[in-house]
View (cartoon, one colour):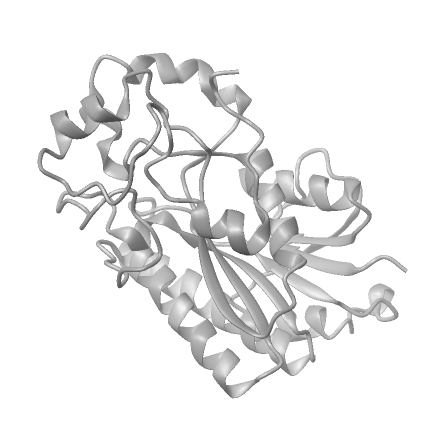
Length: 285
C-alpha cells in the first residue's frame, strides 16, 4: 500500500509542485488548502489550519469519507508566504497557530514524520546587515529580521522541543530559497544590470520542482530528531560571477570556502549530504 501523505498549502506554487511530484512517485496524497490546487484531481479537503479541531480531525483520519486511510506523514507548507503581505499581527496569528496545530496534531495522531517549510529568511534576510560569512549555512544562530521570519525561527525551536519530548519523532525543516519556476525565468533579465536588486538573499532561488524533490527526500528521512537544511538551486540568479557580486555588495565578507563562478551562495551542502538532494533545474537551461 502506498504511503498516505497530507500536504498543507497545496495550492501554492511549491505546494502544487509537491503534490504532483509525490503523486508521480507513488504516494497517496491528501491536499489541504483553502482552495483546490490548480490542475489537481486527487484527494482534497478545504481546511482552516488555524482551527485546531479541523486539523486534529484530518490528521487522525477521522473525516468521514477518508476515515479508513491513516496518515503516514505530513508535509506542512501552508503559511502567509512572505513578509509584508499582511500586517505583522495577521501574519503571526495565522502562521504560528497553524504550525502549532499541524505539529501537535501529528504528534497526537502518532504520525512520526513531518517535513515542513522553514525559510531562507531565518539566515538574516534581507541582509541589510551582511551575513557573517559566505556561503551561508545552517551553522550560525537564526537572525530573523521580520515577523514572518520570526515565526519561521519559532517553528524550528518548536520542532526541536517536540522531538525532545517525543524521541521517535522525525522532523525535517527545509529552509527554502525564493521559490520560482520556468514561468518566472524570463523576468531574470531585468536583474542583470544591478546586483543590488537581488542582494537581499545572496542572489538565490530554487526551482519549484527541485523544492518538491527536497520534500520527497525529506520524507525518506526516518532518523529521530529535528534537522534543518537550506534548499536552493545550484546556481545564482545572476550572469555576473560571484566574485563581482560580492565585491560590489558585500566587500570584505569572509568567504569560508572557494565557490564556483555562479555557484549558489546559500549552501546546500547539508541538504546534499543528509537528504541526497540534487537540484536538477536552472534558469540557465
